[in-house]
Structure formats: structure tokens, C-alpha cells
Length: 342
Image 1 (cartoon, one colour):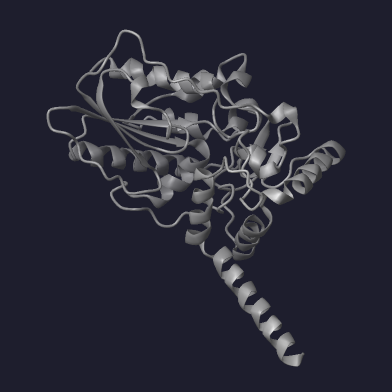
Image 2: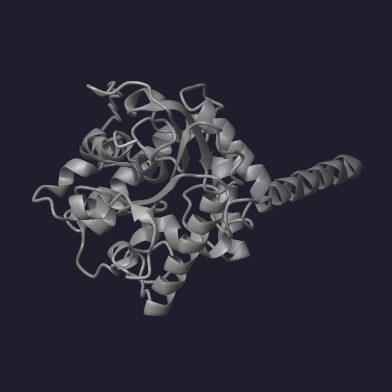
């Protein structure tokens, strides 16, 4: 009996240490997270929970709350009056533009994409008009511009927690978040999690996990985008010096790609939902960068269109950090208005 207890104790110790090591590995947790994204539609009991209603619904477990359940419903129609041309289009972007197909763009002969968190792998094509768009959501702007040089090599590891991209920096907070993700997000636990999340929402009036409710309770926001501090927040202090740093970095990146044979380079910063839907106290990051007189890079100014609309609700999905079909097509139309010039 004593030997059996010793074996059990040692087994528990080894397994516990293995799980802790796995939760401490950013590489491992991101690998699991990416694999689950690929297999997110698999509802087998032992699979990791993933909501089809949006990343914030997944974060908050609010699948039972109909007010936040809004499908993507993206449409990718071929533009009228412009076909394939001689433009080689490159998008260095994030999840906002990852799934947009080449068929929606005017006058392009090819479309190649890369992530802003990776080294840019492409070379300009001879005999083509090479156009590069660098797109990123607002909460990544300060972080990416601080850690990257010119996208010619991978930036240093980002400090994003694997589940939520909220910039958790302490080891304990990061590991605890990952332990919860690896141990308790299985589908067979969904009824318990969703019931708890609905209880917290209805009784305490707040979101769960890494989400908070908008002030009018109509939308879910990433907690980090409405926090009082942090580079991901729409309300944290942004000094003039930091704005100038971002502008200088954008100009440096522009010069780098120009020198490497790209004909035109554009930046495009997609406002966080909180920026547009809850603008009181906004730190003005995007307009301060775009209106800086030192900036020599062209921008697709989504912020001005979204922020000046009398009906900003149409631009974002209620339970997701991403734009709606309407918001996406505003960006596509902006891009095409430039592409038809080439």
C-alpha cells in the first residue's frame, strides 16, 4: 500500500509539473490555441471550447446571452468595373484582414499576406506595381511599433497572454490564465461555465474572463482596451513623445520598403471597438499619429469615417473584437479607391 501511495504521489507530482511547464511555455500554449482555432467547429466533449459567435463570447462564455450572439456574415463580392491588372498587392496585417480574398480588390494580379508579428517574407515583383498595406488593430499599434524594426526579421516575443491578447506581463498572471485555458476549457464543462457567466452578467452586471461590458451593456470589450493603463488601452495616457516615436518608426518602415523596391506603402490602423463606441476619455492615439505633420506615409483613415458616423453601432460585432461586414467593406472600398489609380 505504501509503495502504491508513493507511485500515485510521484505520478501526480510529475503530471502537475508537466502541466505547469506547459502553461509556462508561450510557444506551447499558442500552438494549442492555434490548433483549436483550426478545429474550433469540433464539438466533441473532449475538445477545447470555442464559440462560433465571436472571440469575446468565447472569452466570456456568454453563449446563452442572445444580445451578444452575432454571426460574421461577411460577404466578399467582386467589385464592379475593375478587374485584374498589374498591381502586386501585399498585406502585412492581422486577423481583421486575414480572411479577405483577392477577388474583392481592384486591378491586382496577385495578393500575398503576412502577419505583423512575423518577418515579412515577400519580395517585390518585377514589372508590377508593388503596393504594400500595413494594417493592424489599434490595440497592437503601440506594442508592434515598439518591438519591430522594419519587419525584415521576427520581432521579439510579444507579451500577449495566449488566450485573449491582453498584454498580461507578470509570470503568475500569464501562467494562471494559461492553466485555466489548458485544464478547464473542455466542451463537457460548457454548461457549468455558461451558467456561471450568465449568473455574473445578470446578478452583478459584468462580463466574465477577459471581457467587460460597454457602458450601455450592448457590447463586449476586451478588458485591456478599456483599462486605465497599458499600451492596449484606448484610455491610457499617450504622451506627445510616444506619438512622435510611432511616427518616426512608421517613416523608417516606409523608407525601408521604398528602398527595397515597393512603389507605394500604406498604413491602416483599425480602431478598437471601445474607441468608437465609447469615445469619452479616448487618448486620441490614431488621429494624433495620422495628423502628425512629420508623417510621410499614406494612411487608410478608417478612424475618421467610423468616429464621424451618427450610427457607430453598424461597424462592429457585439460579441467580437472585429468589425462587421459593413465596417470591413468601408476599408475595402478605401483600398480600391487607391488601387484603381494604378
